[in-house]
Length: 467
Image: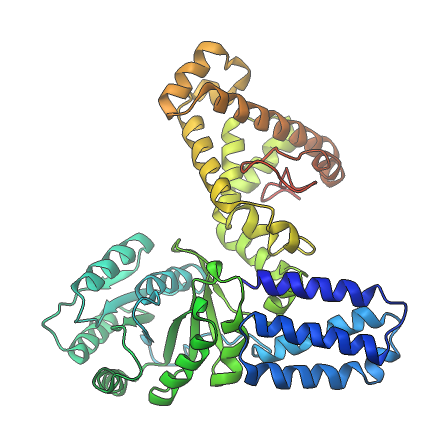
């Protein structure tokens, strides 16, 4: 998300920071570029106009002119205004109610509500340590109930069964009673997709809302609809007391206009963003961190949180101790490190959150990386335990057998062994020289990771848990 906006703003800032001093003329040029960038990102005009006025008022004042580094002062102003327009601070879910807290999901058809219900259930179980039950009140689409049952099973949430011959209010009330009996913390209620202009359907959801009185009513909307996402959210909010918005499909949205428009247009905060199809691809929305990502400053706090929740700490500590003690790094270790990186959104996902790496993210073909990960997994899983522990024994006949077992070619085995050897060399330096050794090793590791060409210095990633 925001790739196009980030690229344009980075060019604007490069020009302005290259100036010896800032005058009213070159500030006006920069502001004009920022305005154009926002409009091309499909940000609503009612948001762009006050945004630019605030930036201009601060930029031509003493705040920039008296700064030792006026270019950086201008960037700081833009970042603060971006943060303000998106809501200033993250607004977490409200659980200040007698359990179970009911979260109702509303939105248009095809916005990804059912998948988002499962993602939110997984998020709440892992991050908030909540016991979660999910139920579908979509009585118009039998497949929706079955889909929710399937994804609930995948994330380990309790599924309350419902059917198309039931009344949505009865479904919700029965699920609430069952959730109380089972001491559930959160009940997530999935509803049918509907248009805000459909009076009958909007009447139904109003009636459902009044009957169950959810503590949170979240509007799920596809971010790729741009300004329309903000306008639709506004229309729903006029009919239903929304408490927040969940933006889905943000991984496919290069513009980001919805994220920059929704808060200003609706007055409601974005609480979560969906970053892909995987059921762990949901993040809490932090305006200040997102502003940092837009301006290529990274999002280290979210990266740390991701490592904390997605990395197996016991495995990481065991691996770190083994490496420090013996310096040995085998194919089992190699596979484990690749899987850890993949679980955090792959190399591209990590780079988007690392300061100064946003532009390099575009050099990575995520689909090719994902394909390479799967191929490498298949190859290593086709090896014997002895071969994984002692890669040096993998010669001609063994390579042919492994290639046949994994559905790959001998050339693929050779490529894997080359990547492994590069990683092994880096790990030996890590075990001897700690962080300094690792940084020296990372310098010449281009091409050492799946996905082919990597930006300089990004070929070897520090394994999670290594200090």
